[in-house]
Amino acid sequence: MSPLLKVSSIETLYFDRIYALFGVSLEVEERQIFAVLGPNGAGKTTLLKTVAGLLKDQPKKGVIEFAGHRIERRPPEKVANLGIVYVPEDRGLFRELTVAENLELGLWGRRDDGVQEDLEFVFGMFPILKERGKQQAETLSGGEQQMLALGRAMLRRPRLLMLDEPSLGLAPQVAKAVFEALLTISRRGTTILLVEQNARLALKVAHHGAILEAGRIVLQGTPKDLEANEDVREVYLGIGAADTVSPRGSAGPATRRRAGAAPQGVRSLAPRLVE
Ligand SMILES: Nc1ncnc2c1ncn2[C@@H]1O[C@H](COP(=O)(O)OP(=O)(O)OP(=O)(O)O)[C@@H](O)[C@H]1O
Ligand SMILES: [Mg+2]
Image (cartoon, rainbow, N blue to C red; front, top):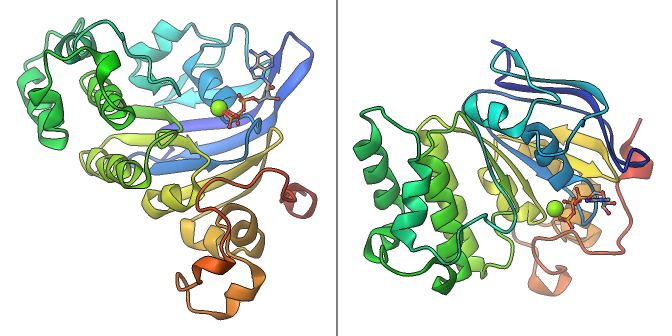
């Protein structure tokens, strides 16, 4: 079976001279949760924006295929019409509108009879969106806003949901709840491509992961493969070499770096893993 999304050797530049992606390739299978991990400035957002068609005339090189269509350099509305829904890092909500109004925008243009079923799915996943229908979006907490963004995205019935750092700025318990919702969304059949700095959380739910550093994919594999890699353990999961003798997951807090995000200034995987 061919992948739902196939990105082949794409190069994306800003201002025609600043390279942000240098020949990135990846394949996202239907129904998969695919997580791209990487530190600040790695090119994660650029990757999603390139696929979504939001960077004019980009990628400069390479091919992007979605469900059998070539989509590179297509305008964003055409990409969206094929079923790719992008939730940006700032969540893209209309802050002055209410929760219900934001959800209605997700339904814009839909004339099929699955609307009620989709609303029930979203309210079942996030009951708070039903309870807070009249509340202005900007008065929601960060976690509730992420839920609203995900709920609205699901009302567009995506084939591919692309999420930019869904855990950003959320308390650990809230981030966990959001990632649990991703599993629910995935089980319903939606394919998910997400980018994250919180490797620990992302690898818990993902079926496949890739590590992006300085515009290049330096490593790919199943979460198990990635978690077994010493460099990933140290740089991205914050598990020091001393912990590798202890059973998985039992490393003591004293030996851990802050959970999740790849610490800034820590050595990169690139020198050793890139071919
Ligand atoms: N609009 C822009 N104009 C010029 N350069 C940009 C622009 N947006 C991003 N870049 C550069 O492209 C590179 C990749 O940025 P990008 O935002 O994709 O990284 P990221 O992995 O999403 O980082 P973060 O974790 O901070 O969100 C960086 O060097 C960044 O400075
Ligand atoms: Mg980003």
